[in-house]
Each structure stands twice: as C-alpha cells, then as structure tokens.
Length: 429
Image 1 (cartoon, rainbow, N blue to C red):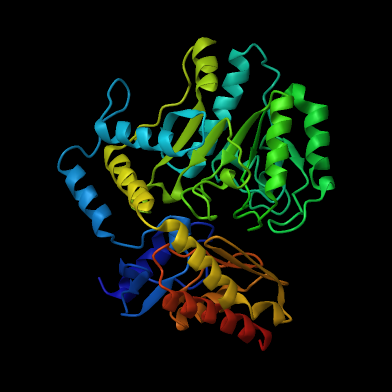
Image 2: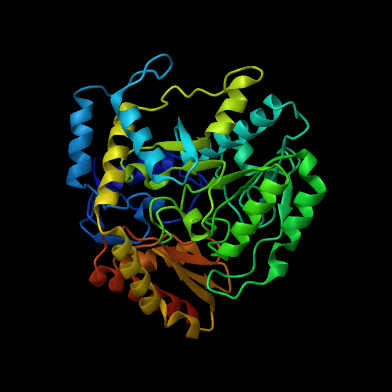
C-alpha cells in the first residue's frame, strides 16, 4: 500500500479521536518510531513533544520493554482473570503497592484510564451503599478538570469549558467547586478553598466521593495549582466522611516532578487511578489502588463483591511490560531528568510571553504550556509544527508539550524553538 492509498483508505473508513468523518485536518502516516522520533512514511522525522499523550516516557521501541513483550508473548499472552491469576499481575501489584502512598494496598486492574476512573467512581458508590448510606451517591469535583470519555467520567469533567457539554441533561449532574486559582508557585490565599469548603459542608450527606486531578489539571485546562489546596481538600474529606479519588492517569510516574503528584502536598487518597505511562506507552493498561478499609467495606456489605470485571483485566502482556516500565523508571535518574526537562522548557519557552497573542506560559516538571489568547486553527498550526520537524498537538487555546523523559537537551531546544517560531508566525497571519 502506498502512502497515498493508506491515507485515502483511512480518511474514507477510519474515525479518529475527537474528529469528524468530514475532517479537513491534516493526517500523517507513521512508518516507525525510535527514541523521541516518529518517522513518517514519506521519510520525514518528527521530534515527539507529546510522548503519545503522556504515555511513552522512556521513548519509542525501548529494548527492555520490547524484549519483555516478546518474552511474555511466548509464555502467556492472555488468560481470563476470573478464578485465575498469573505472575505478571502479582509482581506488578506488588510493585505498585510498594511505591504508592500508604495506606493504598489493594489493586484493581482496568483496561484504560477512563475505565479506571469509572471503576473508582463505582467503588465509591458501592462503598457507601455497603456502609448503609445509600443516599451518599453524588460526586464533588472542581471546574477545569478532565477525567476521561467513558459515560460516567464525563459527568465530572468541566461542564462548561469541557468537551462533553452536549450531553447536559443526559449525564448525572454533580457538584462543581470553583477551580483553584492559586498557582503552584504562588503565595497561598485561604479564599481559594472557600467554594469547595462551602459545597462539601452543605452537601456531605449526599456525597460519596470527591474526584480531582492532584496539582496538575490536564485536558480541562493544563493548569497547575497550589499544594495547600490539595492538603485542605484531604482534611475536609476526612472531616465530612467523603472519599478522596485522586486521578493520576496523567500525572503518575514522575510527570510533575514527584513520582505521584499527591506527594507535592504530602497526602494520600482513598482511591488512586493510574494509567497512561504505566506501561511506558507499549500497551493499554490502568489500575485503581484502594485502601484496605475501602475494600473491606465493599466486600463486607451487599452484594458482597465489587461489581466490575473486564474481559481483558490484568492482561499478562500488559502487566509484564508495565512492571518492566515502572522498574525501568525507578532504576533511572528520573528526578534529574525531569528537573532538566523542566529547566529546558522554562528557558526554551521564555520568549513566548512577549508575543501579543500569548496569554501566559507555565511549566511544572516535564509539562510545558503556552496558552494563547485565541483558539488555535488546527488546519494551520499542525502543518506548521510538522514543517519544523516536531510533533505537537494543540487543542483549544493551548499549545502544550510533555516530552519523553529520555529527550536530550538538544532535541528539547529544537522543540521549544519550533513552538516559539510557530507562535510568532501566527501573529502575521
């Protein structure tokens, strides 16, 4: 199949994420990938600033992960997890329990990040039901959040600025506190917690859980908020007997500069959702970690079992490569790498605030964000980045990057230079 034939068939028959079948957006065919570079079928190479939506933290085609996949495929590629278990699932769970904040010590495997959030929400509802509090089945969250595209998850994504507002009236309607305005490095302002405090104080009798993205909000706005907000949220949840669900699908495994973003505030959730970087981007896999008290309550009440069971739960291939990926991260100098990327992003994106079309620039760990004053025109900006040899996928008013942790400073400089150049070129259009 030629490149033209491949693209023509794709456009005719394949529906891509967040796209129309009548889309005029550019589409690029990938032949292979190595390290931090994506090779297109026409021979061009692009420095990947997206780590394939936060997941490919070690770079593409890492020999350790490739070898682990091949080894596991020769032993056991899949087996149902109902009534059976296997070493990859056990070893991965052992490692996750070891590295996540205490007292999280139960692991439930899921297929993807969105499903992990769905699982955690179901656990919270079932926990309260088993505790004899069936009226506690509502959720509290904060605006500008994003928690996935599965149906119930959409109900806790930002209801106005989020991507799912067309489902209003169909999705359950929950409670949304004002988004935290104190940025990560700002002085703490006590008024920042007032909206959340008011909602949980007035509605805790109906609330089973709070769900939020710790410290770094993702696709709902790419914002970084003050750790004190998270500390006070934890204290209020404890005070009013409301479970805390930490959605670390995007921030887990070092992205924010800590292994888990909760560590910036020194807190631990009751339920922790992990995904994306869990397998180093090799396969889809997610996990929900729960405290023993949550597990015992669900298991001790009606119906006595947790009501969820995916067909491909704890897939051995995925568990095996996930264990290898997490161990690869732990054995590396990942803190130094993240710090180096953070410094490179700050330096490289420093010219952007001077441009009239830029509303602001923010960096935390291996996350860099340029917020534009106007919504970007994807038909124009995407080809501009490709022409400069980088892969960046903006949305809305946000041009953001989260590079693989193995990206060298030279490539990071090429990436940030391309962003600055494209932003400047947008002024003249």
